[in-house]
Image (cartoon, rainbow, N blue to C red; front, side):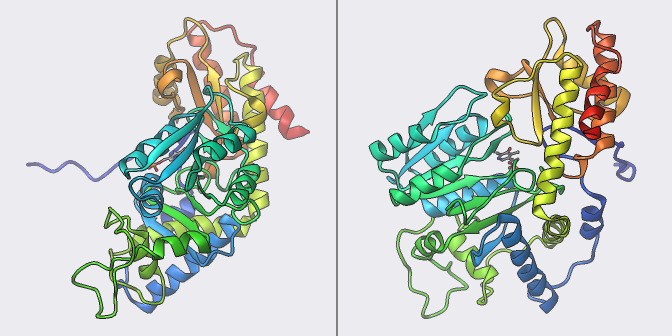
Length: 406
Ligand SMILES: *Cc1c(COP(=O)(O)O)cnc(C)c1O
């Protein structure tokens, strides 16, 4: 064959619900050369990355590291390592990613129970406690920010409830971490997983995770070191974890002093994950959350200024993404296409019951910036106008600028 030309990526401003435009500093870190898997530089970089993510997750958990793969690999590693066939798990479901937790837990052979609310709402703590008392689960698994609906589930009370009833609490914070308050230790969350492609400003492909001592002990109690690398004194313990690649008992030994030769750490993603966390820690977690809050409020005011209706319970909206109703008679996909081809701007659609009903516009990570917000609003106004929507001239940019001026 005649090979295609060198990769040439068109310039884009990714203003959807993720992935987002990657911070150039993260891209630079990713272009660094590799070293050997057990090179002192490599293991030192792994240790630095663990320390950085303890800051990002706000935890003292020793077991804080990366699972190689997209955010979903982190979710699946957590659930397959915690759950055994027949275990009861309770999932508060308020969007697509809650449904994903039920799906993965069911594949682990768990008995799955849910507390469900309509999309656009969050789950009340009392409803979760009532279900915990009734179901008596081993684990409550919940999403913090569900990008499918933009809702941000309050977690402090859930942590308190789980402690009180001696239940483990797992949280998928992929969409929210770094842009919304998150307190692993203060809220009493046992296991948290995330990804880089939302507020952390990186590409997808690495899943930071943290495990409390009691969650780590439970998983260590299921250690089965694989054939070929096990030592004479490696006794099998507990029920074997059904996945090899996502076996957190072995992965913890890889990141720990033993440096068990499990997988080959994806060094380029390690560099990316390290830089994402380094940038957040350098900025300060509180400052990063405040930045997402500011630009999120500007975007919220801006879409309102264009006359668009916001979807869902705005009081519980994540800072970093807003869903707006597609006006009647306007082709949602046509607008997205025009934004992309004429302005190089991507915004999102949604899934399931919201498919074709809302657009989702993100302001996160590297794109939680004033110029990105104003450019998107200016472009959206022009595209809406071209479809005959009556919008106030400059209404979006004007309303956003007022937020910045105040
Ligand atoms: C975006 C998102 C994910 C993404 O998972 P990937 O495997 O990285 O695609 C997971 N969970 C939530 C809550 C998300 O918003």
